[in-house]
Length: 175
Image (cartoon, rainbow, N blue to C red; front, side, top):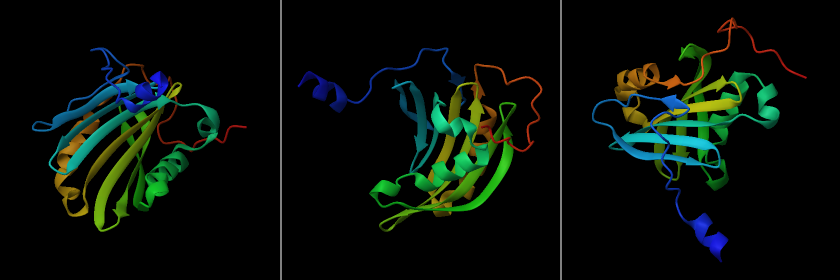
């Protein structure tokens, strides 16, 4: 019974001031989530029907050997699929976030009668995978572009980028 109660409770742990990342939320956006659960740090700000989030979690298993653009595409297309969410990727591109190569995927999600736009940015740090996501009603996605850009510019991991790895070189398939 005690374990069931523990699992049913929402996580209440808040990361300390100095954590695995720092981010500067745009003015007027409210923090709606800020917690660590099973080794993943999650931070979400929202305004109206839009939200921006950061998720930093351990990068383990087979995903470490896959190219970053493949990981980003799979993550974007699989989000909510188990409950019937239909996902489409409209644009995919390499970008730089915090001095690291990142893959940005923009698309739309439909669940029942609601259509939502999203941009998901995926990047790696040693032993970690990072997802930064903007969700907004599809017709409002472009209206949040400037704030999203400032959010990405204000995002920093506490660990420095790895040495002299070219930002936009092709990922090498590891065996």
